[in-house]
Length: 418
Image (tube, rainbow, N blue to C red; front, top):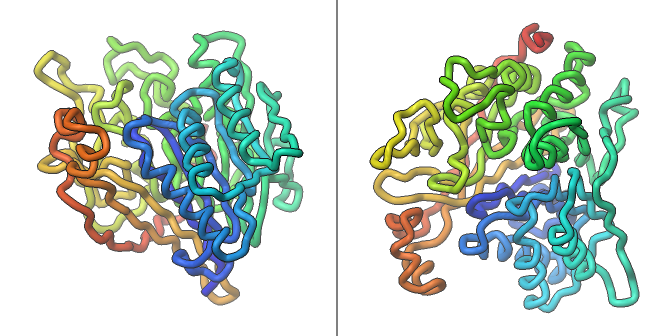
């Protein structure tokens, strides 16, 4: 089999946690030769599985005589739901008894608080031997591996292995105005993981400001973008509406919101699959259905599946919530699969194989359900059973089928719009 790059979108409650795994022998059940962690934050209560998953991969390396390590750790920006679980991961690594190293910790975003700096620095200190030090820089200036490149040979990267590259599309965008949260989110690192044939885009909490900058790259490239075909995009900022449009207010009618920048972003990148973490009943009510809908025109079509989203344009009252479960044949995935009947949530996996001289391998998708209500009650006490988010949690683990992603039609000249 050809080499495999596996992108694991790990369930972590309200947050983002992604592990990039590289298998040169092409077997996802073997030993990952390389690991890259991109963001690791969310709700402590539901995140033990995410930490356990990462530690399991590190321990597989140790068992095979490979020094357990991260080739790189990328924190897109300083919001807690992108880094708050680093202490949990550090504790899990220490409990495992293995020494893990990482020589490359990339911290994107602006306006880092002292508390969040300490979380990253403590994680970094645990990743080196006692007689070594690792320097972590924060509040980095504007950076991009694509801004000045004219051809692929000019591109830099955070790290690479085999034919796979982890690259910065944009990071550290600075705004002259806006609230503190908008400034932080707009400065998020937007990452591309690609193997020359396919790419996965992980944008952190990028706002319409960030997306406008990325649109500028695509407009300059025209019909020959330097980013390979995007088969999966994690929707910016978990699919939040407030940062997707220019004129958001909670009272502005949907028809009056300006979706022009994110629509151009969706047209330029033309993803075949989109993913959103979290939901339902998280504090921020996302992913928002109307944001997901922007990406539908380029999405691949396959069998019917469910996803969960919050409907912004729905009557709000004390008795009516905006959360709904939808059925679709389009490439839409959320880490919460359904809320009708039983709550089903879990990890999402995208498998990218290197192509050969004769074939262009089509990526594959897998969904892994997690946990049982009984498990949660045993772990957290009876309060877990009364949590409305998990009240009807799934009754047990089931095997998850693998499905092939069907390729969407090639992008048209509309890529040059905007």
